[in-house]
Length: 164
Image 1 (cartoon, helix red, strand yellow):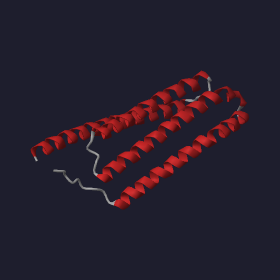
Image 2 (spheres, rainbow, N blue to C red):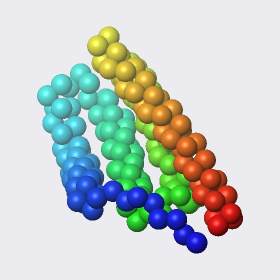
Image 3 (cartoon, rainbow, N blue to C red):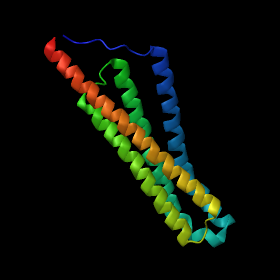
Image 4 (cartoon, helix red, strand yellow):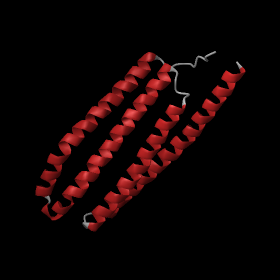
C-alpha cells in the first residue's frame, strides 16, 4: 500500500521551476558574456591582464557549478511535487548538491590565491571571499542536516511499508 504524501500547490511548483529556469538562462548568458567582459577589463586595466585567463576559467567553472546546482534543485522540486522524494536517488542528488557547494569553496580559495599571486586583491576583497566561503560551508552543513532527515524519512517509510 502506497502512502500519499501532501503535495505543494501546482502553482507554487510552476513558479519555482520558472524562476529556476530564469536563473539557468541567466547563467548561460553569463558564460557567453564572460570572455568579452574579461577582454574588456584586461584592456581597461592592463596591469592585471595576466589574471584574465585564470580568473575567466574560475568564473566559468563557478557559474557551471551554479547551473548544476540549479538543475539539481529543479529536479528535487519536481520529485517533491510528484511525491517521489523519499527514494535513495533523492539522497544521491542531495549528495551531489553538497559536493557542488564544496567545489564552490575550493574555487573561491583558488581564486583567492590567484588574485593574491597577481597582487591584485585588497583586504575588502579578501573579506568578501571569506564570507562567501563561510556561506557555502554553512549551506552545505544545513543541506547535510536535511539530507540526514531525508534518509530518516526514507527509513521510516520503508518500515511503515513493511507494516502495512
